Image (cartoon, rainbow, N blue to C red; front, side):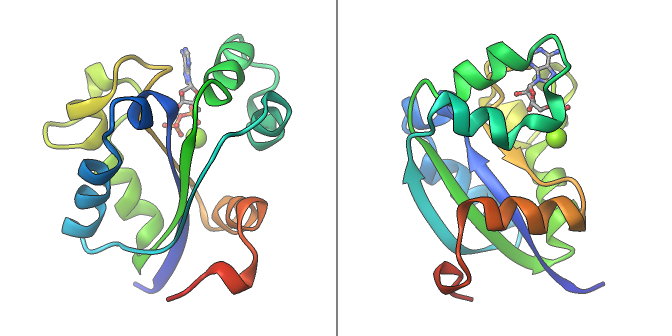
Length: 140
Ligand code: ADP
Ligand code: MG
């Protein structure tokens, strides 16, 4: 067990419904600290770059259009095993499969519009944090 940092995004379906505070409460209740946070409006090109690992998937265009449709809140969460802990708090990608009490079970609208993004491994967490934040912006 070690203290980690992970990249989280509160997606447009959630910011549109004014759910930022309710979602942040889930993180904080799980022991994750929000050590950086900002609200931005991604361009489609920026969303495409962020999700380039999914460029060959059939949902790529829908995903990047959605992520650029309205503001998002990008944030860095810190805590013990933060990467896996955040994935646990998020719940499964498809809200129909997400465990009760998870963010996606409570708030997601569909498999695409599923309220939150979270890094899936230490290497991706590092890359994704530096995609959005400079070291000066991480205030632990
Ligand atoms: P996760 O966000 O749980 O890590 P993935 O990395 O597999 O899931 O997918 C990235 C994002 O792409 C998902 O969160 C979701 O917004 C979107 N997505 C995944 N699968 C589908 C699908 N079958 N149809 C539409 N959008 C999808
Ligand atoms: Mg993923």
